[in-house]
Image 1: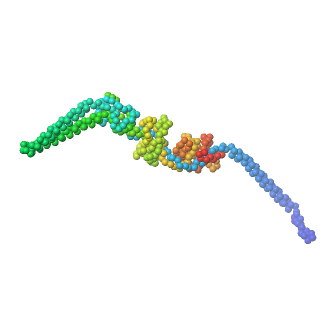
Image 2: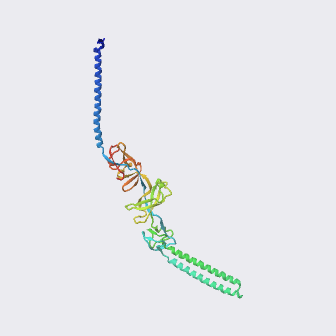
Image 3: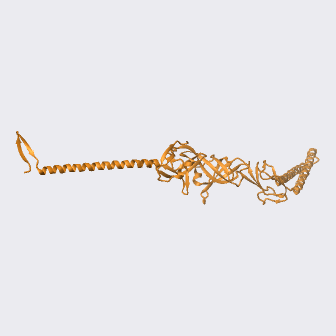
Length: 392
C-alpha cells in the first residue's frame, strides 16, 4: 500500500507515498516546458513582425512617386486623319468648238481669272471673213428680188379689176413674191450660220473661273482633234480628294467640317465635305471624300495634302499628350492597379489637339493613368501614385 490512513481527532489523514510525488513533479515539469515553448514561439513571432515592418516601410519608402490621373469621359469631336490630292472642284477642259485654224494670239496665262465668254485665244479668220461677206451680199440680192416681186404683184392686183390681166397672172406673181421671200430667209440663215462659225473660231471661257493650264501657242494649227487647249477651275473652287477606308466612309456624311493642310506648308484651310464617294475600289477597299476649300494660291491642283475630318461628338476619355507612349506594337499607356502596380494598356487614339489626346478605344475613363515618366517605368513595377485632377 502506497497510502496509509489514520485518524486524528475524528479526521481522516491521507499520507502521500513516494510514487504519487514523482507523478506530480513530472506534471509540473511538462507544464513548465510547454509554457517555455509557448513563450519562445510568441517571442519569435513578435521578432519576425518587428523585422518585417521596417522592411515593408523601407520598400514603401523606396517606391517612386508618380503622378496619375483618372480621365473620366468628356464630349470630344471624333476626327479622321486622311491624305489625298488637291484638285479643282469643277475642272473645265477648254478646246476647239469650231473648225479650227491657225492661232494668231493667246490672251491669257495660267493663274489668271477670266469671266464667262472671255476670249482666251484668237484663230485666223481671213477666209471665213470673206465667206461671211459673200453670204451677206446674197442676203441683199434676195431682198432686192423680194422687193421687185412685191411691186409687180401690187401692180397686177390693180389691173386685174380692169380686165387687163387675168387672175392666173396674179396668182403667178404671188408665188414669185413668196419664193423671193423664202430666198431672203435662206440667205439670212446662211449668213447667220457663217457668223456663228466665225464666232466659234475664237477659244472662249465657258464659265468664269481660274485658268490652270495653257497648251496652245501662236502659230499653232488647231482643230477639233487638238484636244484640250486650256484647263480651268470653275469659279476658282478647289477641293481635296481624300482617300478613306471603307469603314470610315460608312459613317461620314456630306457637310462634315474638315481642316486641310498642304504638304510643305504649315497653313491650315477650313473646308467641308461636299461629296462622299458612292462606290468603293474593289482592289484597295477605299473610297473618296471630296472636301471643298476656298481658293488660295497655296492650294495647287495636283499637290498632296492631309486633312482632319470631324465626324461628330462622342464621349471619350481625354489624356495629356505626355501620357501617350508608343513602340513597334502601337500606342499604349501605363495604368496603376489597386495594388499600385504599373500595367501596360494598349489604346487607339482619336482626336489629337494641342494639349490633349482623345482615346477612342482601350480605356473607359475610370483607370488611374500615369501622366508622365512612363518611359522610366516598367510593367509590374510598384509605385506610389499621386492623384492629379484632369486638366491640371
